[in-house]
Length: 599
Image (cartoon, rainbow, N blue to C red; front, side, top):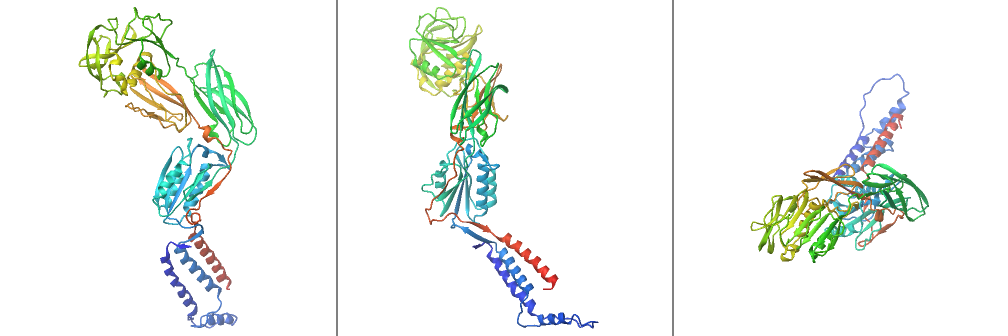
């Protein structure tokens, strides 16, 4: 037991005063009375109040002494150790990954973990340094080495649930690093996962409990004969066979409703075909709640953009082939100069060659044109030099580029064109719209420069491709919660924003390098809106719950304890001052009853 205010023991000096009050005789005024009935009681009072006599048994005295002693003891703020040994530092780790949203007994695992952590902090000895770590996507120090219990309790309450995939063992390394700063420490992990405490003095408090849960893992689609073929994968993580009803939506309209029968632990793929027009996204939803509702919906984006066909007419140019092969929604074809062109393409790239006549449809890109054409007048070849970028939407993010070109074609800038690159006043690259056809010209052979070795080269070519065939590059359209989304805006975009599934808006900073979008905590459909001179373009991406790592609720409770220092767990106990005060009040009530009844 500890006394947090031992100075209060000086008040024990009041106890002798109470005793003196009982052994000193009180003086009474003599009066004549009409009856001697009360003489016996008077004699008793005289005997009690005779000074300096031996104390007799008196219940009131005992009650008053006990009340005084307990009151002084309460002022000393006693703390009773219930178990364990005392440590200078307490490290509390709370798992708030997606699986901690699992609910049972009208509370989630995270809520239970926070309640247990609050109880631990409240019962921790005063002066103990408390460190709080949340372990979601990445471990985060919420509070470091504080002795303020109220602040620690506020921080515990402020820990939010997430949909992130996380590994509680990542927090072990952080706890080990923090523990090196303390003379003695103890770490407590609240989680539903196993923790490897090897080398760490502490214990694991499990909040796991098996509950029924069916997760919707993946939803994909294909377009066939103007119909959508939907493929859904679902898993039963429970210990019993279940039947679940699933509704498929296109945008917000119901497309189909099916029943799925799943055996315990079974994963099943279901294929269905639906009809619908102008569908931009789809999702499936379980119609019955279970232990973990966060994985009861899964989303997918219907890709409405068609592949852009690009034809490269060149003897050989790996630099162009490589850069166009990594641009989404582009299908690259190759042809040798002089070959007859079959079919139509969205973009024609002529590298070091020119056709007898340009195709009637599609954009045109000329690289190192050998002679005059209706798109560019070539006046021989000139010496090169250092290239500088002009200010233009297509040179965004490469403004500071600098590379060398050994020689280039001498081309006068056409009236319809905007200059992109120049060398000593000569146009090295330009774009424009000639007779309602978008065109681009690069006046030098890529092999005669070190442009292809710079990081700006793929950005520049991607910008030009986006201008010529109106594409916006993106890595994928479906992500897991917590994943970073690569943002590749159109080259001539003036501003961009992202609208989340809960109608939150985030401005995209159009400054190279474009930072990925990381606020994907909420599952659902997100919208990227890009404002252009002639309007706005919208694109969608979906964020789903990481069911592959967080949906397994069929886990049993466990516990783990390491005994590295003295074989004892972290000290816990109770501050009993309040209970002592309550007891004093009860004693006062008993004393009043005794006095009234004359005992």
